[in-house]
Amino acid sequence: MSDLPAPTILLSEPSAPAAHRWKVLAVGVAANAAFSAAAAGLPTTAVFMRAGYRLDNDQLGLALGLMGLGVALFELPWGLLTDRWGDRPVLLTGLSATAAALAWLSVFASPTAGVVPSLWLLAAGLVLVGVLGGSVNGASGRAVMAWFDDSERGLAMSIRQTAVPLGGGLGALLLPWLAARAGFAAVFGVLAAMCAAAAVLALCWLRDPPLAARGRHASGRARPAAPSPLRDARVWRAAAAIGLMCCPQFAVLTFATVFLHDFSQAGIGALTAVMVAVQLGAMVARIASGRWTDRHGNRRAFLRRCAQLSALMFAALGAVAWLVGEAPSATGAVIATAVVLTAAGVCASAWHGVAYTELATLAGVNRAGTALGMANSCVYLGLFLTPVALPHVVAASSWPAAWVLAGVAMLAALPLLPRASLRAT
Image (cartoon, rainbow, N blue to C red):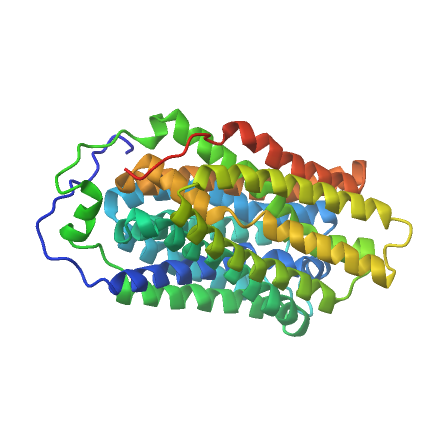
């Protein structure tokens, strides 16, 4: 499938209305926010999921990680299909099917007063959600790359990537409350409705740009078929770096609430406030970083600095957790831990739009679906492995050591990140 030629792009038709590119971007934001509300929002219900499904920490980590495994396994096939069939059919199919899988979880795999579903029933449903939801990133990213030129792509892709913390923030704000008050049938039902609404928006607004709009990226003439990103070592290295840089973020998203609850005895108000702050801070940071790098043409330098700063922030989080270890539930200790945790989470989430723009530019617009699929396969492999491994690290050592180790993942990504500045092509 990867050997198929890229579509030929010609400059031959009138330009599309410029305003419609913002509608396409809105579809990308809605689609990613709807899926992120599940992928990043469900972990914020970890304390309630652990109690409602009667899980221990190892089982909880497995359940939360399996959704990421589903995405990791099928993100690349979805990206290849996007480059072959186009953005619209893939996004419509994926969103509709994801909504159906979440509705199934709501009806058949939610705890009730008399029945607690098995871990494997829950796990099967979450894997299916991940498999189907993996369609969202590549399809929406390829659409945005096609409708925006290079002078706006960093900003546009960063706005699209704000959908991840936006959806996660909405999930953090709403899902724990729903889980506590109405149970997981309501949690999964609301997530299904969000995906269905995004599918309707895609049906109304998403379409391919006219040939002239796409021709802006072809310098007025047809381009030869680009080689597959699957054969490009540069793309593989960048994708692997993105996956590694996501691990600290996933450590925060999946186990920050458990850490604050178990380590500092924080209540639901504090848990919700920290997670919402992380997601809202990440949204602001992503938009600002996209705009900054568009103006200065320094995407690669920005990514390296962000990785280094994130490693320092997680080292600081480990140090704070170690220093307050004797009295972690004291008011000052809780506040200090929450503030540093929030700052580390925001820093670890600020770079996404810039990284995805750089990766898609490296691969070329017509192969962006495949390249983004490669990256998200690595990203969601990290989403599977991080919550599975973290409880074992904590059990073998401590929470401070676990946070420091999360920061080491950022340092491990540095040799894989490209060094020289890549200008638009």
